[in-house]
Length: 144
Ligand code: RB5
Image 1 (tube, rainbow, N blue to C red):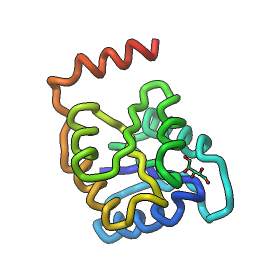
Image 2 (image 1 turned 135 degrees about the horizontal axis):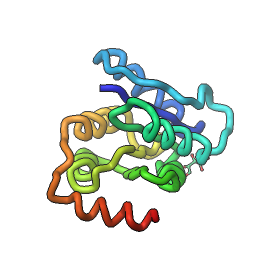
Image 3 (image 1 turned 180 degrees about the vertical axis):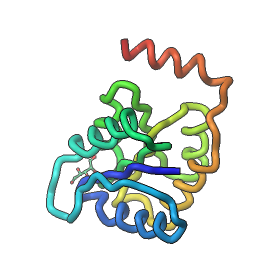
């Protein structure tokens, strides 16, 4: 299991908290920034994580901004990315099972750390259901 994670300043504190969790569980990850709370632009980090998921050897990506909204919109502009903004264990599980999400988006100002950890665990423990593949193929067709 290897994860790639990135955030803007609004997601920085939650990103750091999730890194502590990964360290405690010996889960491998790469952190693509941002590296402090200075103001940055979330599209830059949504794109970085998106391209890393496509090109790197990662199981999935995590993107975080203040709400998770902006950075999920940005990550979804990268062809091949299915970034799901999730806010509880059920949406996390369904994003993996039904939508074959390859990135989950979280809100650093809207999702408490303990909830974010439950979300990540739910996503990691779920599997992609093959019966939804034809819908994923239709999403790919939309990408052209
Ligand atoms: C940055 O202040 C904030 O707009 C950003 O983190 C995010 O919430 C946008 O969707």
